[in-house]
Image (cartoon, rainbow, N blue to C red; front, side, top):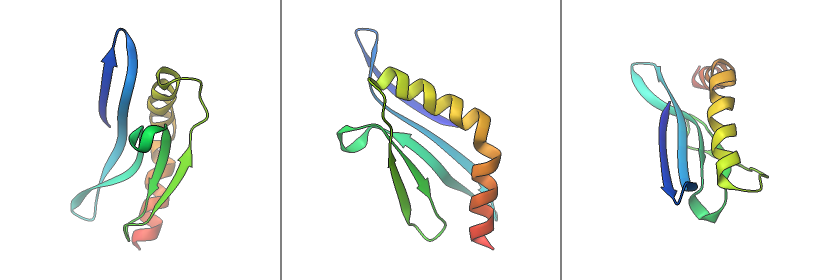
Length: 88
């Protein structure tokens, strides 16, 4: 898990939380939560380069950041299985 958070006055102002997996002899980004484009969202990444963008509906970035970390801790295996199925 790669985590980058920008904080100001004790609040998250931007973040990236990304799950990367070693698949087929290379590190590959599988799922990324971030605040690029001015809103919190999840990108499900595909081996062909496609991305599925899903907005996160949280009141602030602190909650979205916490959710992103917890989701990857709980669900990384499922994300990996889905990505591996697409690689085949």
